[in-house]
Length: 442
Image 1 (cartoon, rainbow, N blue to C red):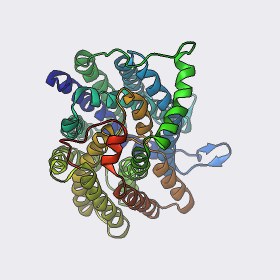
Image 2 (cartoon, one colour):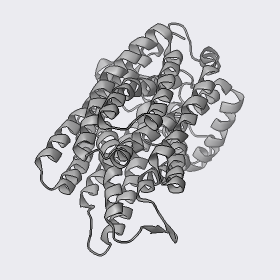
Image 3 (spheres, helix red, strand yellow):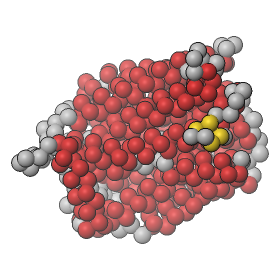
C-alpha cells in the first residue's frame, strides 16, 4: 500500500479517461447532436413520437446509465472473486476509447441513413462509450482502498481528479486551437471527438496497464457456483448487507446518488444550455470548459486540503451550498457570456473537490475485499453516468421547450442531497464496515 509508482499509474487513468468526459460529454457531443437534430429537414421520431433536439443527448445519457444499473454491480461482484479486476478495467477502457474514435464517422446527410440516422448513430455510440466509461471506472475506483491507506485516500483521490482535469484540459486546449484554425467546423468537431478516444486509449496503455498490479481474488466462489450465478446472488446479498449491516453506508450512498445526479446533469447539459439559451459560439464554449478544467485542477487540491482540516463530509456539504447557489443564479440572473464565464469559475472550484472527496469518503465506509462490488453500486451515480437528473431535465425540456425553466429542476437534487448527507454518521459507517477511523478527520 502507498506504492508511489502504482499510485501514479492509477492517477494517470483519470488523466486518460477525462478526455472523454471533457471533450465528448461536457464540451462537444451534446451541442453537435443538437446541431445535427436542428439541421434535419424532418423531425426525429422515436416509437412514433417527435423528439425535441435538445432532449436527445440527455435522454441517451440516461439510457446508458439505466443499462449500467443492470450490469455494473454484477461486474463489480465478479471482479471481487477473480484476479480480473485490472483486465476488466482495461477491456472496457479500450472498447470505450475505440467507440469514441468512431464518432468521427458521424455527420449530416450520411449515405443511406441520412441526418436523422446520423443523430441515432451518434446517440448509440455515446451510449456504448458511456457504458464502457462507467464500467472501467468501477474497477478503477476499487483500486483506491488497495493502493492508499485510510489517512491518504482523500489526498490520493483528489490528486486523481486533479490529474484528470489537467489532462482533459490540455487536450481541450489543442481542440480549441483546431476549431479556431479550421474553416470546416463540423470536421474540426469530429476530429476533436476522435482525439478524445485516441487520448483515452494511448494513456491507458502507457500508464495504468503498465503500473497497476493485478491482485489475487480475496474470496473464493462457493462450491457449485459460477461467476454469473453467484454474482446475481451476491447483488441481493450486498443490498441486504447495506440495509442490515451497513445502514450508514447506505444512507450516504443514497445522499450521493441524489446530489451527484445534480452535479452530473450540470456537466452534461451546460454547453447545450449555453448554446441554446445564450447563443454562445462553439469556440467560446470550449474556452469556458478549458478554463473550468484548469481551475478545477486547483479546486481539487484545495478541497483535499480543506478535508484535512474539517473532514471530507463537511467539505462536501460546503460545496453543495455553492452548487445550489449556482443553479439559482443560472435560472434567474444568467443572461450573457461574461456572466457565464464568471459562473464557470465558481463551478470549477467546487466540481473536482466535491467529486474527489465523495469517492474517498465512500472508500472509508465499505468492507475490505468487497471494493469492486460496492463501487459497482457507487458508479451508478458517478460522473457522466447519472440518470435521474438528465431524465428530469430532458422531461422538463420536452414539456416546456425551455432549458432555462428545466434548469430549476436541478435545485432539488442539491438541497435534498445536502439534507441527507448532513445526517450521515461517518464514524459509525467506518466502524460498522470494519475500518479504523483513527487518523481520519471526521
